Amino acid sequence: MKTLLVTGGCGFIGSNFVRWQLQSYPDVEIVNVDKLTYAGNLENLTDIEDDPRYRFEKGDICDRSFIDRVLTSASIDAVVNFAAESHVDRSILDSGPFIQTNIVGTQVLLDASRKAEIGRYLQVSTDEVYGTLGDNGYFTEDTPLAPNSPYSASKTAADLLVRAYFHTYGFPAITTRCSNNYGPWQFPEKLIPLFISNALADQALPVYGKGNNVRDWIHVLDHCRGIDAALRSGKPGEVYNFGGNSELTNIDLTLKLLDALGKPRTLIRHVEDRAGHDFRYAIDTTKSEHELGWKPEMDFETGLHSTIDWYLANSAWVDRIRSGLYLDYYENQYGTRLA
Ligand code: NAD
Ligand code: TYD
Image 1 (cartoon, rainbow, N blue to C red):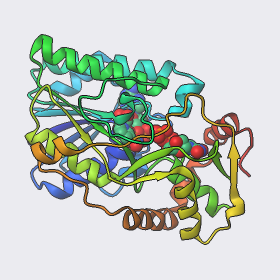
Image 2: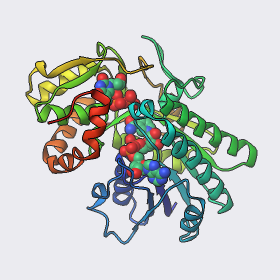
Image 3: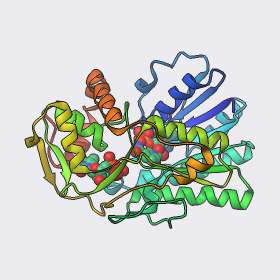
Image 4: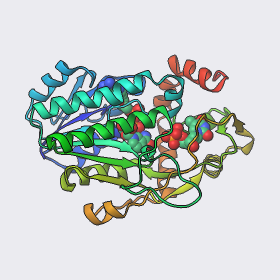
């Protein structure tokens, strides 16, 4: 597995994956295709941009001739598709870009990769395709797909295309589904980086509803190791779940963040709940542990503190994002303009 085509490598998980690959495998080569949407940021990879094993190609995964050209510009051994519209709240405001990138983009990548006879394709998916859990139970790879948001519906459609391309054409595709990631370079619209950056700026933390919803948190590098394990030793046509064994209610997580930052609880604002808000996500990782030899290694408290330290040390990165169109999005979503 020498040369990887990574899509969405300028986003949160993709940039961590690209850096981790270059650090872990001396002979790996990476071509990174990214459209640079609001969530794509060249700054996420400035430390490795001059590495001779790395090449960036700006473009859209929905653009078939562009993807054909990139796939034939190097001898690509595998495609790893991170590129997506990834934020549930934005999908509720406007599902259009989600349908386009997450579904049509995946179809274009699958068709182009099949034509180019790519030997391995990995679709980075999410546990949100399984819908929601009550107080008990876990998602396994056999849990029926029951997405509830436009975001998760678009990711499910993509997963079903991947499944169909394996069954119909024998296309060697693998799907991974992971719980909520946290770590460095996460765009400050998702819960953890949003609440860290708001608290540091003494701005209110908008907790949806009572804050009783539960998420399972996994450090982004544990997810990257899982994707790598699935890519190298997963079986075509299979699905592998990854999770962090770290379930928390949103309100408990918010209190932890405020305590770690030394900020008062008066910053908490309970705001209107998210429409269709999934109650709980939790993952059974037995299959990935047995078949890939993978398990999450980062303890949540350690990972959360190192993430907070990263945001404290990278306030200029955050400040550059929290301007312009970000402020418009924030006002549209939360009804208040950040000062
Ligand atoms: P992100 O929003 O931080 O990054 C997405 C990247 O994709 C950006 O760099 C963006 O510019 C790029 N992109 C968007 N549309 C594109 C297009 N049409 N063509 C080319 N590039 C395009 O997302 P993330 O949090 O890093 O998530 C990456 C993948 O992992 C997504 O597929 C997401 O569904 C999946 N995932 C995320 C999580 C999570 O907790 N963040 C959990 C499980 C799975
Ligand atoms: P998020 O980070 O958007 O991830 P996802 O919706 O994919 O799980 O949200 C995590 C949880 O935090 C989710 O239950 C919604 C909640 N949340 C808030 O309470 N307030 C916010 O401002 C955001 C963005 C999320």
